Image 1 (cartoon, one colour):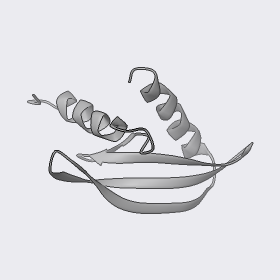
Image 2 (image 1 turned 60 degrees about the vertical axis):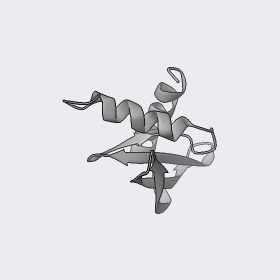
Image 3 (image 1 turned 90 degrees about the vertical axis):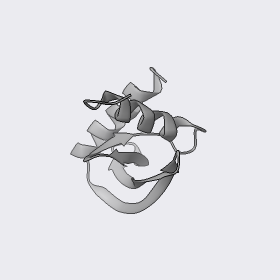
Image 4 (image 1 turned 180 degrees about the horizontal axis):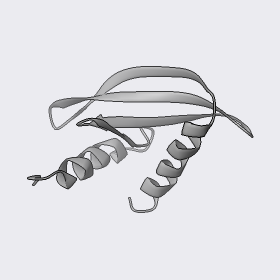
Length: 86
């Protein structure tokens, strides 16, 4: 997980600088709780790519929905980083 998070984060940073051609919103469920989920298609220098993230509290965190357990791990990590988290 340590390696995937910085890579996904760098994609989000690049996505913030490039034109976005399509954004979809949905939800994912982790431990019985629903979290907002966003997928963006970004026009990059080498063609379009997809960027996705799950919203925990008021912030989106990058995750890879095609990688089993990645978004759930990101939610757990983000929840544990908050003050008073477990």
